[in-house]
Image 1 (cartoon, rainbow, N blue to C red):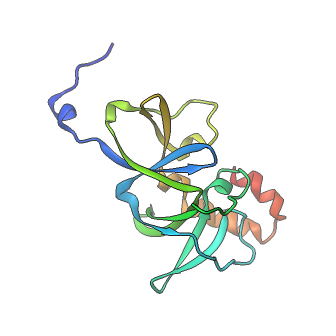
Image 2 (spheres, rainbow, N blue to C red):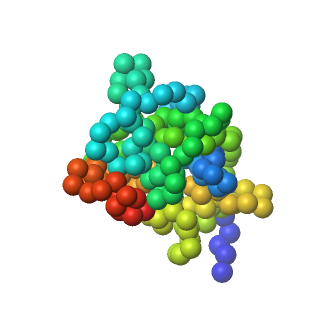
Amino acid sequence: MNQPATDAGASAAPTKYLTFWLGAEVFALDIRTVREIIQYRPLTTLPLMPRFVRGVINLRGAVLPVIDLQARFGRPATEVGAKTCFVIFDSVNADERVELGLLVDAVREVIAIPADRIEPPPAFGAAVKRRFIAGMGKVGSEFVVLLDPDKAMDMDEMAELCEAAQCTAPGDLDAAAA
């Protein structure tokens, strides 16, 4: 049985999300976590890293790791194209803010999604680990996958995968990252 919206819920402003393409799918991050979007530029690769750590960039004097989101989700690595870019965002790990770059195929737009248009992650059948998904935003006739950046880019889990890279063949990491 549906409950009527409360005054607090009815007056709450919709959350804004930055949407972007990964292949043919649309994903989104809460805009409050996004710092900036920068055009793709060459990366400095690092040895003994899992396939999803594409390298680092120099961002105003700071070393910023870049995560290939497609590869992080256990898919083939992103092929760099004309619209490929880095989404620079903040993640929180153990109460510490960490700035990371995400390699995405293209940025789409910023959209507002009211809370009543967000469904929980699917129990099964998702192309991405369920714990990486904050929800499914209903936008018109399509769904947008709302990512939980703190879980999808969990620094402890990624560090464990990086350590495993030192004693594991690169192909074995693809299965571990999925």
